[in-house]
Length: 449
Image (cartoon, rainbow, N blue to C red; front, top):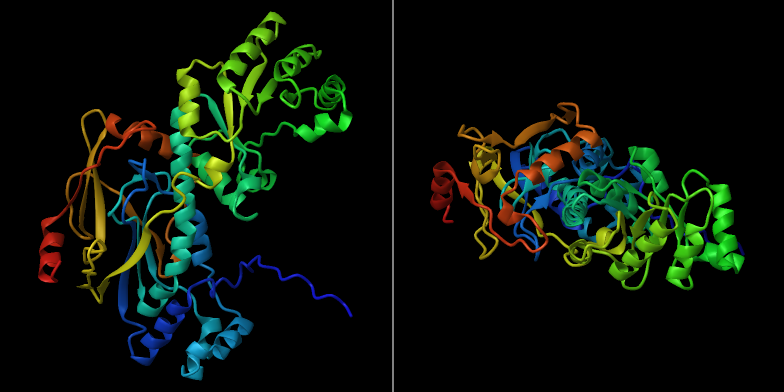
């Protein structure tokens, strides 16, 4: 008897429609049954509150979210499966027959990727027939939540490094193979100089970096022979891992290689003291140009400590802490209905209240270009400041060319530089002022907020 083939859980990019929660589909069917499916709905995506030890977020993931949104679809096979679900057993056949032809035909307004954002303010707005706007909730949150989380973590790491290069080493530590792509992109747009992820580099044009594993040295049995073989094979780009056995002896062996190697990598022990001792060994061997790369469960706090200690480390490889955002692994990102046919809708539950109506966010700055606060208004109000939300999808089609990854990276750098000093740094905890217009406050009061 032939064994059953393993189930493949990589989704077909052409049929992402059912990557959603069941209740989105039951509501879609319910709207159709109630004659409400085509009402014009406005939903807004935002983050309720900041994770601990965060004073801002870096908005990321928009390009992939929009790309998939524009090709969301159900296959005939998927529609047939949905018809078999007990929860949908009373839904008319016409609902399932229409699913393979369903496409998102609405509008999307969004803040630009790489923008620094804050809780409570609209990051993305969907205006579409009610059933379609409901359908895309799960996918949009899933597409934007994780990249924003990692980009924010990466920005903190970059700031802690104070100009020293940071490299994404997280591919093997992520929660599944696909996560490495998202993390590499999010980290790069937030200021990382590159990634170890080869396919992410190929697809996105991110510089790729790599060293060696301890297994290389162990397989030779002799560290000097292992180093020499590696240097012969990769003469232009040799970085040697020196802590398989005795770290400082490993540095001495690395310093003896001719021609001089590009860098050494420290991956264990007291990195500050080892880096200082290694620098001394390298310099005394006339290897001043040989750099020191450090890794080993680094995060922004550890990197900040190493910088404060004066450790002569030139760059940092960050894996687990980056790709999992270990200290703050979740965001309270939500997607809420704010209007039906232009009439405001609110949620009144304690700690989860929402403002009604479609919105715009205006960012205000001082004379030096530093951000002073954001003012949230009704979508059609005009006030002082930079409007942050712009239309990226119109009637189910891309409304404008999306920025390149390099331009997003540049924007992120400018955005973080414009933050008030009180919001920058690993230990920052200040609140950023966000206000709401009188028109929004008046409508919220009318609806019982």
